[in-house]
Length: 105
Image 1 (tube, rainbow, N blue to C red):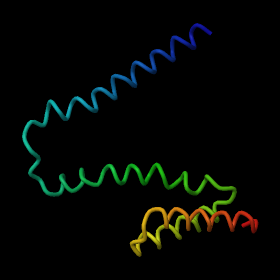
Image 2 (cartoon, rainbow, N blue to C red; image 1 turned 135 degrees about the vertical axis):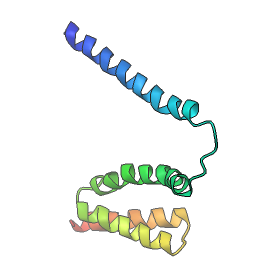
Image 3 (cartoon, rainbow, N blue to C red; image 1 turned 30 degrees about the vertical axis):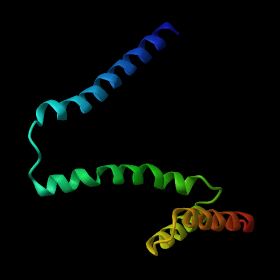
Image 4 (cartoon, rainbow, N blue to C red; image 1 turned 135 degrees about the horizontal axis):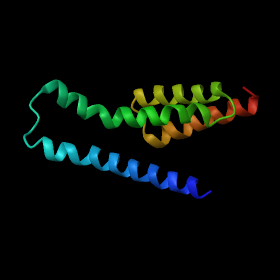
């Protein structure tokens, strides 16, 4: 048991160092403004892609059926594309999932 806790603390320390280095290195190595348009464009979209990658699997697996989750996702996508407000998109997507779950799909 003691070895297990020893390993856990080593893992936590390594994760802390890696997290610190990821945040500290860009601040120390990149002193000038980035001029490359491609790199700036890439860095601009990183937060959106990261959020999407974390959210999409949760959308599909939060329901009893992957099909009802996919139907809710596509409903939300269609309504958002048509520039509906966030509450409208959320309520409609939840309603679609609820109805499909009641129907057993």
